[in-house]
Image (cartoon, rainbow, N blue to C red; front, side):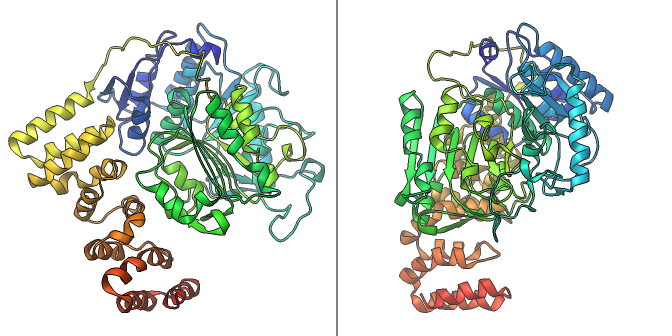
Length: 597
């Protein structure tokens, strides 16, 4: 960390159209200057740019065809070698496959951290799969051989390499052939069965005795997300911390009260928010969702299933209630099942990853509460320069054995102190591309002169990319007045949501045909706390956009507003109309309850 923090960071973000250009841009990093490189899309790049606040965002043109497998291997080796110039290599091995899109994360980590590179090929399954004992043994042996090939000590904690960044697709869960002595000594019951899967990342990189050889972090997904996760680990700020806990007082929950942890972070100069107990009712949570979460670190206590999480007094939230994240976020989530299927958008963990989490401590199966590091101990480790993910791993005691907490992200991403560490600012590099903000200004001027909807669309996209939400929100109003509202509406929704411009958001939403699932979630996140004051037109818009499969949840939010504006008879008619469409017994029962409210 000392070596890394002494290297200059240039206040520029470069956007690239493809992997060839991505590789070319990273190869321009030097010991004196590095800068973030992201793919040119609206999914992850704006989230990063809003937090990083560069002086310049540059868009490069493609340098040519995609690199061959051999070219990728050679390039990663060269980036690793160049990354070590002028610094001690990182205590982390990066392992990837040139056939997997996550190699782009490996490229950033080896170049940025001076980490050694190794390769692990083969198809072991998809993230939502479960490895059987034979396939896990094959993966484990192959990973050991890959790290052995680096040629430095790594089989004991405290030697040269203590962490592995595994950048490739793998099943999150595994059923390794592990003797009982290497599992936590728990009494199985209906919820916790020893035959259920463990976390693949927790079972890998262990000796035959069960002792750890290294801590494994895992990066997977498409190129845009993997680059974002690596660049966030290297460059994103980690200064704003939000603590959320709906746990009650009393044992065993009091040991996980984040109040002391929040005080510790605040005393060290971090900006903090604390929401505990009765503040974390469902209504309180819904109020937090308006405009999204703006924090760098999120520490949350909950419980539930893959698709739901419980708040104060057992009130239930679902995947639709996962917050939008306005900045790259590292998440420590105490929740039994959030990463059970990390690629399934109908689950809590996948929703957090899709919305911008780049480092994640979570569970693939019921692990029991005490498998998680309590917030106060977690923060003590962070403040002692323990990496974010490593700090969330039990490193002694019964839950250090093969179990169910997994780590997603770069394992040595560290939270720098607010005082005493100053990252040098490097000079801006040769741009090698077009300034995106200047392009947005030009497109706005051309739209003003011509009314061309394509110019409006280009301007809005670039305003969103550079994080100019206030300007983008204003530009939507201008574009709509000039007849180009439909051209910019979909891209304008994010800025209008984050600025909480509800009326303009509704106008843009109604121009989207059809609105995306994220757009519908944004609508409900903005509207739910306002339902007591909405007019009939807005209430009918919400009714047309009920989220399934269990529409009773949104109806329960909506009906008090309908009662107020249109009367109880209309409310009951709406419920009955939905009952006529539903075949699922559970949803039917929930709708029947609404008639008896």
